[in-house]
Length: 107
Image 1: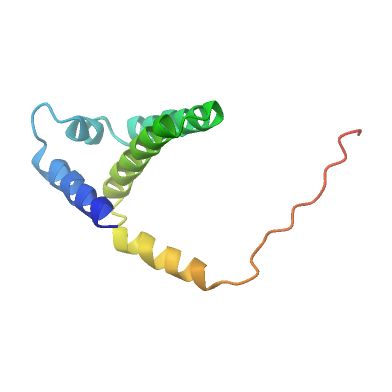
Image 2: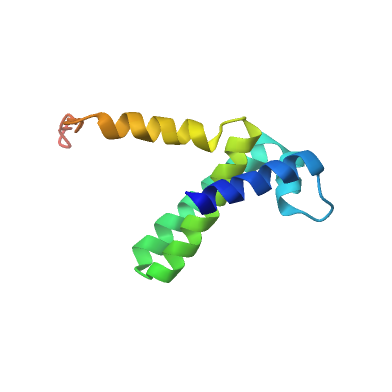
């Protein structure tokens, strides 16, 4: 989590400093719609890369998705600690497999 925490801190700095020529600052200037659009694009790219089966490409796309997710977190004042707390809570749950109902595809 150190890399994620460090990236998040850099993103927070860009949010405050609005550095000239910074892509991160640009995303903050554009606002939530642009940030969400990028998350959607990157999510699709992760799916495509994974489907193509080249792990190197998938890793790169996952990194892009994580970066844009961190930008969203900073935009909405969600900290890395908030995410860690939620992940910890979820790890405490046992037997939390969701049961999905079957859909009759013939109807």
